[in-house]
Image (cartoon, rainbow, N blue to C red; front, side, top):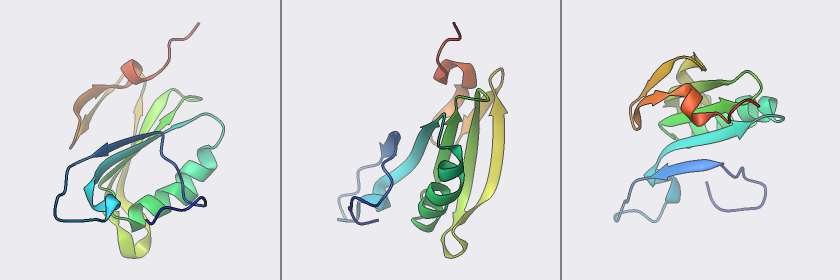
Length: 111
């Protein structure tokens, strides 16, 4: 993904240092989008772009439903992920990168 104004800008990115490559996406381990109003764009356009770029782990932190959607195992040639799991607010997710994550800890407090 070369840098341009038409490309998506992630809300949260985890990178690993890769001294052997000038390609920024080669070091991306996880991308998370925090979504309240653009869920369709995050599930379609961004998910396809991140899968095509072989980003290993993609999350959508869905503020409306108070859940996290986790996409794993990118299939770049098909622009899709091999697995998709939804974790509800009261659940824990196990991330290959982040380990055990309590979903409600990543959501804003309800007031």
